[in-house]
View 1 (cartoon, rainbow, N blue to C red):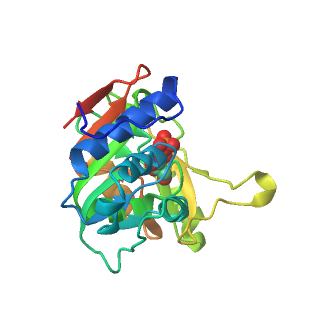
View 2 (cartoon, rainbow, N blue to C red; view 1 turned 60 degrees about the vertical axis):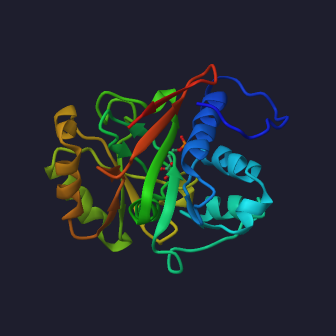
Length: 248
Ligand code: 5RP
């Protein structure tokens, strides 16, 4: 993939960081087009390189755009980059959303929510005409659950966490309530005031990620599930040497 953008002098990166930047740059070069006026910005450590590349497209094109974040981190990225901050109330249809992932299978089903943003991430993914995933080479997987072994992140209403955990166990999972910054900090609380349960499942449960998603979504108290099925149009995986592998 090539870009017509003039190369900037940036700190050279190695290994995983080089991979993240390569994936992010390729996603922007191929999918954030001059005619796109509303762009969704996801969460995680790969997304800052997405914003870095968007800024390189220049103030003229970006002044005519709105950028919608998936959470506090991406809101800060947008503001600090001097880009126009929008929200999904004002922009329920987004031209393109780019976000990271914790694991991606060959059908582009993803586990997301390692950063506890899965509800807002899914709203922005589904609001987008095009949803693109960016990740480093460690995230590409033959089947979900093999690389991201800490489990499917599930956001729940605080009141319901214990009953949802029982139902997840009945489904064959091994749910763990995610804690915040250490045991004394108590449970991790999302941007929507929910708790997060991380739930590993046996490999057989991932033979149909969309069936697993449907079962978990039906549990009373579940707000959103970090399984993204049939949403991504393309995935860019950065390699340690700075090249990329793209999947559609
Ligand atoms: C946060 C997410 C992130 O996109 C996911 O965890 C990937 O993060 P990173 O780019 O740091 O690997 O889903 O909820």
